[in-house]
Length: 183
Image (cartoon, rainbow, N blue to C red):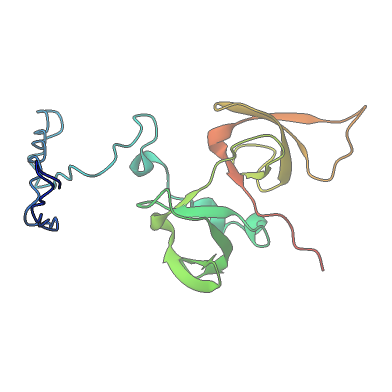
């Protein structure tokens, strides 16, 4: 650094190290409201993402319909009840009271109580109906019109046009299916 008369002063720079840097304190974690507090010993996780109010996996029924003969060769898309955002599982059959599922290349036996069906998300999804009181139970369909509440279905491999029969089903009663394997 030049001074008057052309002389210079040596400058030493200290490297910034983490212990020299000061960070502001993190914001305080908000306390749960009275409705969120539980007297039954549940732990509160401030980092957990809240679940949507209309989609509580604990309220969905156990997929006992998978034990029916109609689903023996249908590759239903499933997910874990406690991890709904995890990748899809493929239903491969039943062994006693346990469902045989495939996750990637690994096969495993899982209790039905820990599984949920994956509902369709759009047009042209391949689906099956698991409502035992419906005439479409256990059959394959393609979604023709999609809505969060109801879907219009047409038979899988059914030609479009005159005479085509469409079915109206609740979306919550439909399970998405993996495409059929071609040999």
